[in-house]
Length: 397
Image 1 (cartoon, one colour):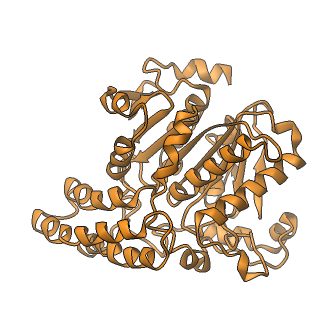
Image 2 (cartoon, one colour; image 1 turned 90 degrees about the vertical axis):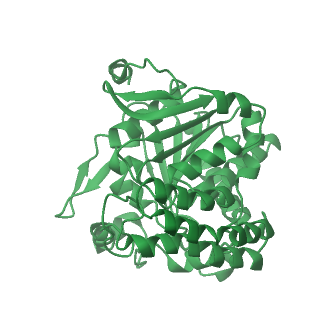
């Protein structure tokens, strides 16, 4: 498995944070160069420092996963994964190898982060790490928490939220809303048949439920469903071509040791292979992690349609755990950055939900400073402090 590792710009004692990009099948280099990595790519394909890279607050790992994504490859087709068991076991094995190679970081606090389809990867990966720690497998990993940005975690709740969000944001009209909602009961039944382990039934539910999203997009026209304020350009709705040009330069490939592998942003092979996993509910393993004190942060940019904040807020509030009632009744407080409200936060115990203002699907790209502040405060346990002074934190960092 291919990965980038960037030491913290401030201290080796900072937490170790791993980032997983979604897709499924999209490379984490998207985040390295366009979101929260140390560098951005200039138009002349040179690298420029990102002042808000998450290496400002952590030792940062980006992994190309599942196998077949980005520069991660195998010559054996059996290594292509179709579910979260395979994905999470591979990631756990990767972590064991990483900490064996870099034992000086094994004692650091460890956090799992990512976005989009990583709403599936991350709960499974966190559960696998926690299970390994409990069973005293290999090297103990000091797991403290996991964060999911604009993720897909509980499809049954999140697919139902599509029409509500689209109506609220003026993307569809009331008549469209009523017509599209007639699909949902069939979608809901199909998701229940898929459950957490189905295969053919999960493919059927994907086909049925995707018509809800597609119906909205057909009405919306060329809308960027990752950021409804924009138009969709290209297959990913954004122009990431400079990254592919940069990473496919022979000197870059040689320096990375990836041989002749041609880099593509998102792998259609991995995407197709994971379709049986798409509609499974990954919320089911999260309550056990919360009960053991492992923190979870769900954050979402307000202008994303495809993994919108409304659906994420609903599944988080619907999740049954010992702190559910207290979380639901907890007040919403402003998330303030540099004296301005950058979002609204709801939290109780180990669980936090943050709606980020003026951002789409990729929060660290749209609101880089707010995203870095979020990471700093969350890992330091001060996210819910409404009177937080960012200047003091910057001085400490």
